[in-house]
Image (cartoon, rainbow, N blue to C red; front, side, top):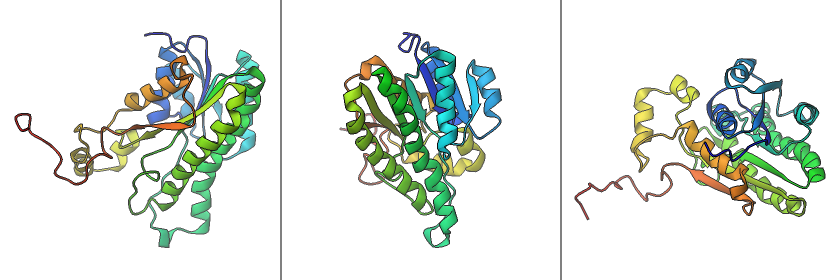
Amino acid sequence: MTHRLENKIAIVIGAASGIGRGVAVRFIEEGAKVILGDVDPACAATALAIGADFVPTDVSSFADVEAIVDQAVKTYGRLDIIVQNAGIYPWQLIENTSADDWDRVMAVNLRGSFNAARAAVKVMKAQGSGRILFTSSITGPHVTSPGHGHYSATKSGINGLIRAAALEFSGYGITVNGVEPGNILTEAIQLHRSPEFIKSMEDAIPLGRLGSTRDVANAFLFLASDDASYVTGTTIVVDGGQLLPEGNDFRLAPDRP
């Protein structure tokens, strides 16, 4: 390991499993002290397993997000990085989505991102430095599918928030960026999707496989590190080339020109 985050203090919200856990593990490997936040009590076991702290956190509650930020400062004296990864994506056609359903997805995914930025900036502004990072998605900003209207709206909104926050916070040494994962082979995908569905997704990706949580975590690591000190207001797409093809016939055999 290159110790790119040596002595850095990081919060990862939405870290019980999947991408959030992968980001936390990668940060710890590179020397960071990490505090995990999640509504899932199983996150306590995750924290114990990977050597992180845990603070129960409902990202839709500003008080909860403020509390985990306060805990980081109380424990370690500062906060260098915050990753807002928490998100929900119930499959619902727009015509079947109630106002309450819509508001809940907005509250977790979009208001949660606002809460993370608002809570972190106060500490980072006083320090004169910081990294605020979000998990966006290719779904919403670039593509979508039936049943993901609310989710698509939140991820597009997160990208707008990234740009606005990057501009507002730029004078204080704070960068704001995000990662747009494509189809990532998380525990949730394996649990809720059939092997046939996963195979169909693989067939749509030029690199021929779903991404791993480590693929996404490596992008977050770059944005959290000093290597990205001049990068702000943008997102990195991690999708194995999924957005590139114009149609389904895109693979060339090795011996074809």
